[in-house]
Image (cartoon, rainbow, N blue to C red; front, side, top):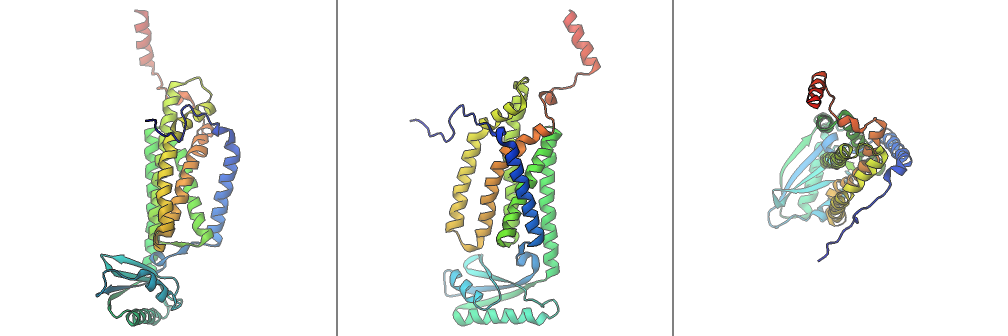
Length: 325
């Protein structure tokens, strides 16, 4: 039985032919993303701006009516709630942002929690309020700072590993590609104003891992070919390397996108932002491993001699002595 091949053998696409148009597009999108982030900002969720969390158990039900609850709580005018199950299917948490002015008037947050609790108990006779927790803006701000530090540390640590594993040019190229990918994902949240919460941070960490994984696969093949084809012009060698890894890239990215699209379309609303971030992230990571990471090596002056060990004076003397025998 003949296997299906999404990418035919001996594929020879001249990717580097479009390096300047794609570079201009990438830079323009990055600049636009940062303009949107700085002007519109991110729609930070309860995790980063503070809020109230109400824990509810439906004692007579096997599972909580999430869709109905979301509609009921949203109708109270306190903004869009985040309703999730935890533990058993009939145990939920309702998270809402702190109302405006609650930092000066703590009673406003308490009044909001009482209103929501009363609405849930009135609409559902078996609803039991297990507790109300408040997350202050200060604690949430510290959480946001920690999340940013985690993203930066993850990116830097893996880039240093690539630097050590290959050459410094590869580490710089991987880091720039990573900045490109994360910036475009943040730009998506800035332009759509989807809620940016801890699940989004998890998605961005996943994008970081996938971006570097995809880049490393391409870089590893480039390094092998640099040792193998020492006289081949670098643009041709990069095209060859990308084409040789294209089948793996297409299959991996394609299967992940199918799963993520199913999650975005059929999954619950609460994980839509997570799915959207990963969908764009996978697409952008695949694009950058071809049109950002590879051309970067040309601009950073990588040559076949980058992987040839420098012969010391003693090694040269020993080699000449062996040749004279």
